[in-house]
Amino acid sequence: MKTYPVAAISLDGQQLTIEQVEAIARRFAPVKLSADAIDRIQASRRLVERMVRERRVAYGVTTGFGKFSDVVISREDTRQLQENLIMSHACGVGEPYPVEVVRAMIALRINALAKGYSGIRLETLTLLVEMLNRGVHPIIPQQGSLGASGDLAPLAHLVLVMLGKGEAEYEGRRLPGAAALQAAGLQPIRLHAKEGLALINGTQAMSALLCLALVDARTVLESAEVIAALSVEALRGIADAYDPRLHALRPHPGQQESARRLRAYLTGSERITEQGQLRVQDAYSLRCIPQVHGATRDTLAYVWQIVERECNSVTDNPILFSETEEVISGGNFHGQPLALAADFLAIATAELANISERRTERLVNPQLSGLPAFLTPYGGLHSGYMIAQYTAASLVSENKVLCHPASVDSIPSSANQEDHVSMGTTAARKLRTVVENTRKVLAIEYLTAAQAIDFGTGKLGAGTEKAYQLLRSHVPRLEHDRELHADIVRAEQLLRDKALLFSP
Image (tube, rainbow, N blue to C red; front, top):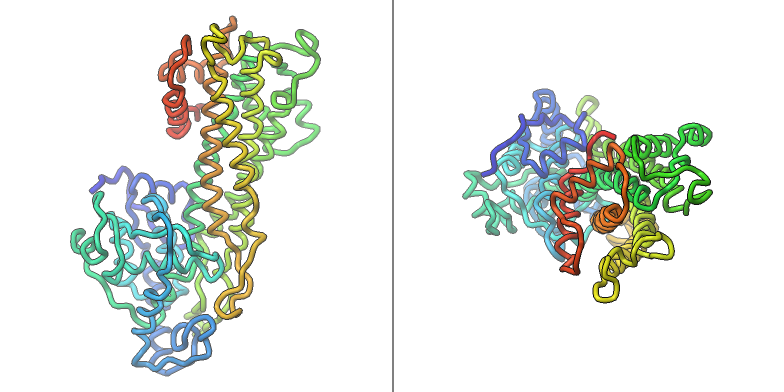
């Protein structure tokens, strides 16, 4: 078992943050249910049991699902109904999600159920808490969710393990669900009325993907700005374009913050120039960094708000209001808010890669930089960073394909009962890939900017000096051709490790 580096995070359905989701997913922070949440869960469960006793007709409790919502199920069959739901809906295909995504998914599902509107039994939810804390991670295929009736297929695979079915990863081994539970000292459960539906009706797969993508996109953005500043110095850029007076006249918060960071990173630099010193204006990839990065910064802030709100929402159906004993069927499971947000953030993140690759091209192109071709002192015999720019261009092109919005598509399902779907999970999966590609593109710019710096003289800025020295402590200057793959991996790892997130 992993040791827990932080105190247990209390889940009450009200105030879970994206940073806490990351801590649970990546640092194995433990979780617990708050006392208030337990009270709400038990009150909601009492309502379900009363409905079953009184044979009330309620979707998913005493009826079938989807197109079968008009089929009334006998009291004797309500438990079998829930187990059948899980088995029949576990139709995912493709490679399994990484453990970090599975952990985030479980944490978000617990938090949604902790709000007390879903009718689940406390002992059932406790098993989910213990699975998370003891490291029982269901094997969940990545493909198969429409993102509308919740993430039905992914969450069904999650719940299979609770029943002693399916498969799970435990301490590095892939085991049958029952064996994984037993190895962790846990026992499978039998679902009661409403519980299967409560466990799989929600947006937790796409929310989990978005939470982790947001954290990574923020790291990529902050890293991009210090790397861009290093490129500005390498190309003797004009710092006047970052003047606060200019940005006050177009007061987008992200643009102003990006300009501020550039100024701070470049403080004290002897490599930057003034208007008219070498040229009157820089190319857009240097001059417009605050406008481009700033727009991504504003998009990130918007999507962060959407996703954090979703983390603390009830996305079940039907929803039980225990105070008034009402059961209302609605559409809170529909992933449209997240689908649009994921597509928006993918486009905004891809723009960081687009403009980064253009700076890399300027660095390696002697007609644009005034530096040795492809940043090698031995051009001809050596190719230097020629093909590194190819790789960046390839990744940028791939991002453009991935940025086609998933949210504009919809395929009716369940015999046209569910006739509009969000494809939000597809959007979130694509977003993760776009973020990863962008990080690689920035790693290549980082390498080329540092190499270009080595051909010049003069003091670097307060922030760029830190960034340069950090890279050189891991990747030496390119004197002769070598396998650049390893250098790109090392540079990317610095971004992944958040090593460039120092204060400007």
